[in-house]
Length: 353
Length: 249
Image 1 (cartoon, one colour):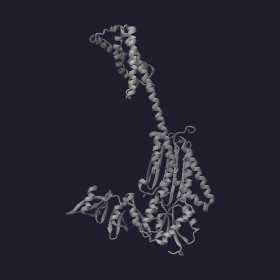
Image 2 (cartoon, rainbow over the protein chains, first blue to last red):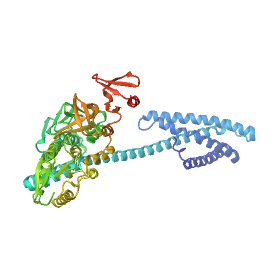
Image 3 (cartoon, rainbow over the protein chains, first blue to last red):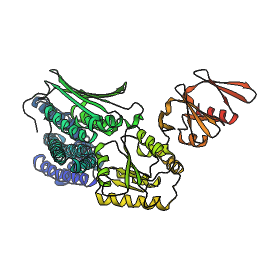
Image 4 (tube, rainbow over the protein chains, first blue to last red):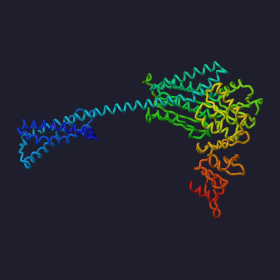
C-alpha cells in the first residue's frame, strides 16, 4: 500500500500541498506565459491536482530501484527517464485541457507559450516526488530494522530464560538439598563437599547462560560437575565417562550439552534398577564437531515420557543459532538411548560476545 | 496395635541417602523398628507381603515402579507416608488416603508430625481398601501404558502392547502375553476401563482383545463369529462384540 494513501489525513495534506503547487504554477504561467490571472488559475489548478495522482507512481518507481541495491547510474537514468516520461504525458494532458478550455468556456490559452514552463514544472515536481519517496522508504526501513532488532532481542532473552529455567530444575535442587541434609548426619565432610559442588555447578551454569559462545571444554566441565552431584544422590547406580578428543577449544552455544546429560540421568539411568553408564564423547573434524551421549534406558517405559522437553528445547536452540547446518538425532536401541549432535566446528580464537 | 507394641516400619527410596535420613530421624523415636529398607518398588512389594509392617515411608519417583504403583500392587491398605521432592503429587497422595506426605528436604520436627499422625491413624482406624481408591483416581490419568501384576511377592510389569488378549476366569482375569499367562485379581470391567479403548475391544463377555493381533474374523454359524489371531488362536466374537469391533476397524 502506498504510504500516503494508507491514512486519510496524509492524503488530505498531500492534496493541500499540491493546491499550493497549483497556485505557484498559476503565478508562473501568469508572469512567464503572459496569461491573465483567471486563465492561469483555470489551467494550473486542475492540472496540478491531476498531476498529484500521477506522482503517486514515483513511490513505485522508488521501490523498484532501491538506493541500497541499485548503482548510481541506474538510479539517475531511472529517475530522469521516469520524470521525462510523466511530464511529457502531463504536457499532453495540458494540451487537451487548454483545447477544451478554449472550445467549451471560450478561454483562449496560447499553449505554445506555456509549454516550456509546464514541462519544466512537471519534470521538477516529479523529481521532487521521487526524492520524497526515497526519504519515506528510508524512514520505513529504519523503523522496520529497529522493530526486527527488538524482536530478536526479546526472542533471545526468552530463550535464555527458558534454558535457565530448564537448567536449574527445582527438583534437582530439592533432591540435592535432601542429600546434603542426609550427609550432615552421617558424613559432615561429604555434606560440605556436596554443598561446594552444588554451588560451583549453579554459579557456572548461571555464568554460561549469558555468553554467546563458549569453548566446549567449559560445557564438558559443567556436565562433569552436574554428574558429580547426581552421583552423590544415586550412588553406585550412576557411572560416568567423558571422553574428549581434540575438541575442547571448539566454540558452542552454552548449555547445549547440559540438558542432554540431564536427560540421560533423569529419564535414563534413574529409571533402570541397576543404573548404568552415562557416556559423553566429543570429537572434532576440521568441519564438524560431534557430540554423542549414551545411557541405558528402561525399554518398558512409555515412549512419550522418555524424551522429555529437554531434547526438543536443544533442537529448537540449534535451529535458531545454526539454521539447518546443525543437527540432533536421538534413538533407542537394545536398551541404550543415544543422542548425537553435529555442529559446524568453530575454532575462532577467543569466545565471541 | 497398642502403645507397648513396636511400630514396624518399611522405608522405600531408591536413594540410599534419602533412606539414611529417615533411619536417622527414627532413632529419636523409641518403639519403632525398621524391618526393611528397600531400594525399589519390587523390593517394597516383597517386603510388605512377607513382613506385614505397620507403616511404610514411600518415595514416589523410583525406577520401574513408582510409589503409587507399589500401592496399587499391594492392593490393600498399609498406612503410607509419601516422601517426594515433587509437590504436584500431593493431591494424588490424598486421593490414595496417604497418612501424610513429606516434601524433601524435610526436618526432624516435620518428620515427627508425620509419624505421630501415622500412629494416631493406626491406633483408631480400620484400613481403607486402597485398590478402590486407586481405581477412582485412574480415569483422570487416561489409559494405562502397562499392567502391573503381583504374583505372591513377585511383580510383573506388562507393557500393554505385549498383551495379546485378556480372558475372564471366575474371580480373576488372565492376561495372555509373550506366550505366557498372568493372573490378576481384578474384574473384566475394571481392566476394560483401564486400557485404551482404541486398542482393546471387548469382543465377547469373556474376552478383551488387542486389535493389533487380529488376522481376520470369520462367520462360523448364524450370528456367531470367530476372531482368528495372527498366531492362529481362535476367540469367540459375540454379536455386540462384532459391532464394537466393526466400528474400530
